[in-house]
Length: 83
Image (tube, rainbow, N blue to C red; front, side, top):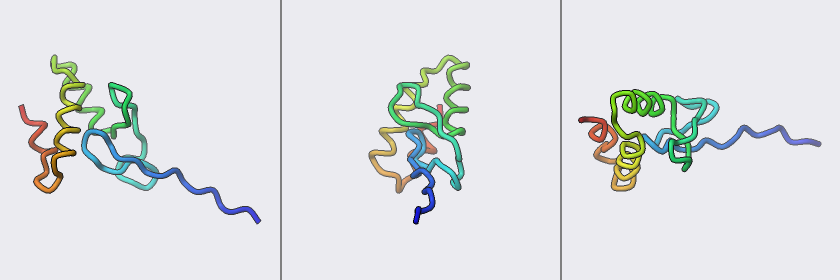
């Protein structure tokens, strides 16, 4: 007897930390600009718009990663996008 095929496990977005995968808010993930992990559609859109405005997407992404590592309880994600 064959077991049913399992859906792929969700992964966390490198920018905001949400789960990405089938059945989650962001169903598809895109490679992060530096190739380390994936980002959700919202972070991808924000980073591409920031690049158009002359900001460095890698610098923004690394700031978001640092915010996620230092504690999500105070929602640093929201503050890292200001400025």
